[in-house]
Image (cartoon, rainbow, N blue to C red; front, side, top):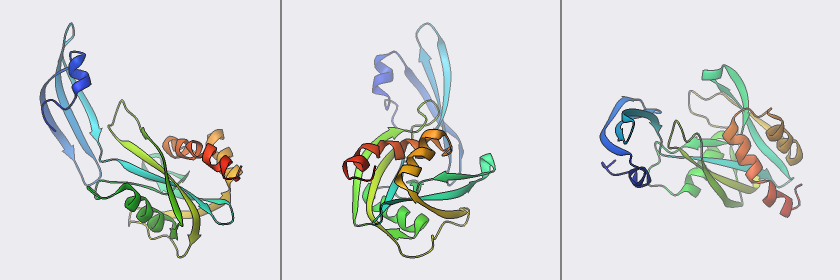
Length: 194
């Protein structure tokens, strides 16, 4: 990152004085900026740096949504999600290629068509992560999932209407997965799945 990588912040008087990275692992990198603000003085802003993520809303030829139940260590729960993954190890690759690979890895599936739906910031006060949502159509399950060693995943294939209910009711507790499903509601309605 350059000293002037926050042009909108600069316009508002956020003057970046120093950037450091106090903690970094394979999956997590923290950035700490010392910023001078008029009328406030120096503040330290720390956030998680991200290379972005992709999420796939997969619809089978039979009109069902392929979801996953995944164990999440931080909350010690099995969570209902969509196939998704970070791009920390995929820099420079096309988003569509990453989405197809994640679909294959987490669901053992391929698709006939992949449509980009939208992008959004996952938690813009604590990370710069931008998540990209794809709708996968004509999905076929070919093999068991092939997750990474730290991933525990079970497939959960449900009618599209049920998936929407899970996203709306809070049963899908991962907020960005729920939003991804809801962002696909209009295209799914236009295609006759709802």
